[in-house]
Picture 1 (cartoon, rainbow, N blue to C red):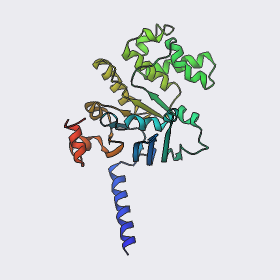
Picture 2 (tube, rainbow, N blue to C red; picture 1 turned 120 degrees about the horizontal axis):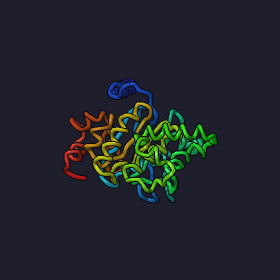
Picture 3 (cartoon, one colour; picture 1 turned 90 degrees about the vertical axis):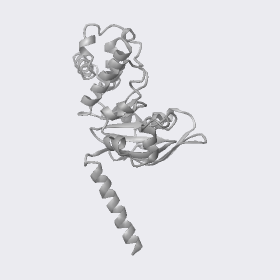
Picture 4 (tube, one colour; picture 1 turned 180 degrees about the horizontal axis):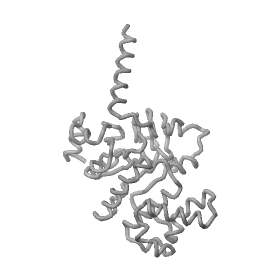
Length: 274
């Protein structure tokens, strides 16, 4: 009888969780993920459902595993020596750690924008056309359309349309970051990962990127790591609070910031530590 009772309680908890997270499909479902750098246990039993067409913010103090986690989502973390993982990450229902899973296909669907703008030392046009060319697009007219559409999507077309063949290094930092976002959009990703994308930008450029994120979630699922809690509160639908490699709390952003359930979450967002 006790087993039946336990099962009913478990099902009731799952039902409540599914109600609190509205019924959008999952793009990612992380299950019992653990990660080690050598002997350092960096991520501990991470369980995190990410819904599509939402902005999910990941907050927490330096060294808590935020950037490590999103680099696992497109398996970039495997480029680091001595990394070991256990558990599962399901992307659209398929385990990305499965030996038969094609990492190239994953990275085509899951784009990434890094902390510091990192345009290629090429023209603005070639930066954006690079991905489509790699994936076999050769037609000049088609490339022109992709470049324009991507630059418009990154809200920078009007600023660069007359200088497409100039080196991207000649742009400001905020413009470079939007070029990197356009480069990401050019391969039509499903998910956009952002690792502190505005930390190196001025307030005006930061605002432009935040406005972009709000527009882009209509078409993409976005996961953003940020130290800026005001930013997380402004732009995200869900927020996960990481601490010492664990997910302490994950919920709707307004609940995390107004009525956190865990005292550690409250202490962090009120500035008592971090």
